Image (tube, rainbow, N blue to C red; front, side, top):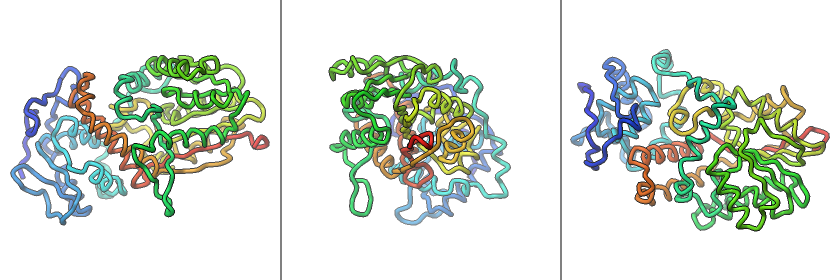
Length: 431
C-alpha cells in the first residue's frame, strides 16, 4: 500500500460535514510524516492480525485477513489516519475519528478489544518509538488555582442543556449503582438509572453517616443532587464548585426542592475551603485535581474535618503501575475532554493520605462494571439525541469527540483498565 495524505474532504457518508478550522485547528490539519505513517500502518496490520480486528479500507479492501465477527475499524481516509497516528499516537487516533477519517459499526467493541493489554499493541522492541510522539501536558493546563477554573469551564460549562440531553433526571454525572443479578452483573436500563444514582448517593451518605444536624462539605457540586439529598436528611451542606453553570443550576434546584436554607453553593476552589465539618464528600472530583496537587487536596480535607468526622469519596481508579506509566503523558482525553486531570490508583490515594494527612483509608468498595453500564446508557442517549445536540450549536466534530469519549471510557471499564471505588477515610481512632 502506498500512503498519501488524503485531503480533508467531507466524510463520504456526510458530504456537508466539514470541519471548522478555526475551532478545531489540529483536527483540520493533516500532518505529513511518511516514515512515521508507514510505521503506524505496520503496527496496525500487526495488531489486526494478533487481535483479530477487521480493518476495512476504501473499495472493499482489507488491511489484513480477519475472522468473521471481528471488531471493525473502517478507514475512510487511510492516508490521513496513518499520518495522524504516526505523528501523535493516540492523540492522532482520536483526532482522526473527530475528522471522520475512520469509524466503526460498533465503536465500543473495537475500543474494548484495543483496551485489552494496550501496552502490547506496540512490540517490546519498538517501545522507543513512543519518544517520537508522546507529549507532556502543557504548563497552562496544570491544575493550579489559576488554571483549575479554566480547566473546569472547558468541560462543565459547555452547556447545562447539553448534559441534560443525555443524563437522567438527577443530573448525576458519575457512576450509578444498579441492582444486580444473582451472578453480580448490573441490571441497567434507562428506566432505573435515576434510582441507581440515588442508590450510589445514599451509600456515600451512609458511609459518611450523614443525618440530621450533620455539617457536610461537598467538594465538586455537580448539579446539586448529592447536596439536595443530604439536606433532605436534615444535614447542612456547603458545596464547592468552579463551574458557574453548575453553581447556578444547583442553587435553583435546591430552591425548587425547598432546601435552599440548608444548601450553600460556593464558587470556590477546594483549596479555599473554610470551616469545620462532620462529613466531607467528593464524587469523582479527585481525577480533576491532578497528581501534583493530591497532597493539597487531602490536606485540605484533613484540615476542615472535625474530630470524629468521616470522609466518603467516589473515585475513578486504575492499576498503580498503569497510573505511574501514564502520569505526565498528554493524552487525547486530557487535550479534548478533561484538561489537567489524572486518574489515581487506590495505592496512590493510600500513599498521599499517609504521607500528608492524619487520614487513612478505612474501607474501599469497587463497582467498575456498573460504570460501564452507566456510560452505555449515556452514550446511547447522546447518539439518539444527536439532532438535539446539533440544535444547541455543537458541530459534527464535537459530537464525534463526545461519542468517542463515552465509548472509550466504557471500554476502559469493560476491560478493567479502569475501575470506580467508594472509599471511606477516617483518622483511625475515629472509625
